[in-house]
Length: 144
Image (cartoon, rainbow, N blue to C red; front, side):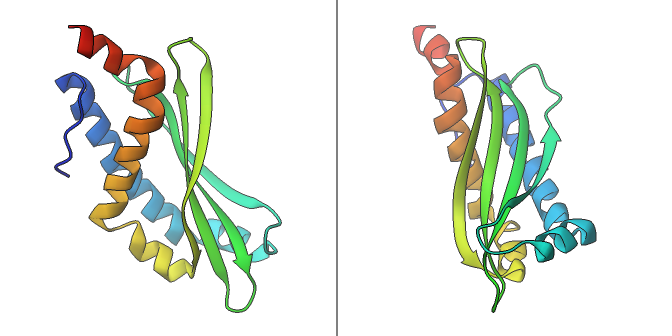
């Protein structure tokens, strides 16, 4: 990934590392038999199946990153995927954001989607837009 963001180098490195780890996590989740069985049990627009990973870094406001998948149709089985983020805002409050990034795809298409570089770029952009802007980190670097 080559996208550069306007925050300190330490946070940039940690964010890029977290996004790389997250992409691997999502790929593993979408291939996990238990996750797929739970997805198969759902009806269209009934509920979402979630998986979350903790972020063990003090260098980023992100606390958890996850994936949510919702069934959209039965035949053929089509799904939508959302990125979920939990982060500490500049107000000190924990915020949750979920953003659907792709809709009406087969599970195989989603499995391929999350291995591509543009998936990582989309996650990085979302982190930059939703998390870093709300945490005040960009403000601190602009003043420096």
